[in-house]
Image (cartoon, rainbow, N blue to C red; front, side):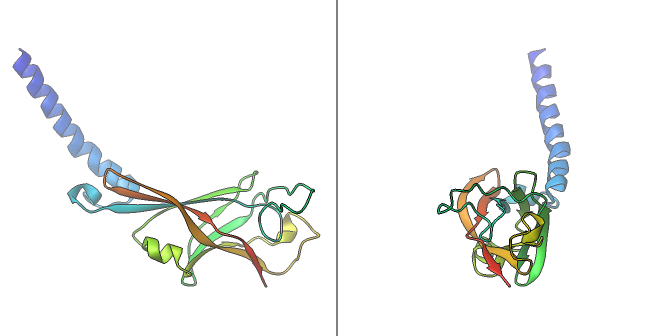
Length: 163
């Protein structure tokens, strides 16, 4: 009886792996068998906080509190092409998770990729310049590897107003 139970459990586990793996790979966009055959897949998670200022950050020289920049359009641009976009939440926070099939870590961290704020600064404060966009290079915060995945956590560097 124990032998039959073990065979049923083994068969169930194998069946579950055969059914669940393709579903997970499809949801992650890894294609058939993705990283299961030895290939590593890279996921880039870009997160940041955008404040309502010319530098997109909180000024340490100013005693006045700087509010967040809510509902701002954010674009990840590489080599002049828009790769992904999102919008900041009510607290000025944004996140752009991206699979690495399009680019490598060195491409993302080079001058070829940047975060661009597409919403004018006047949308959060009418006293700020009406022309120009905020943009920032990317900086590596950390990495994690496991289960056939390389996860790169990135943040925007210093924002600059580009006119």
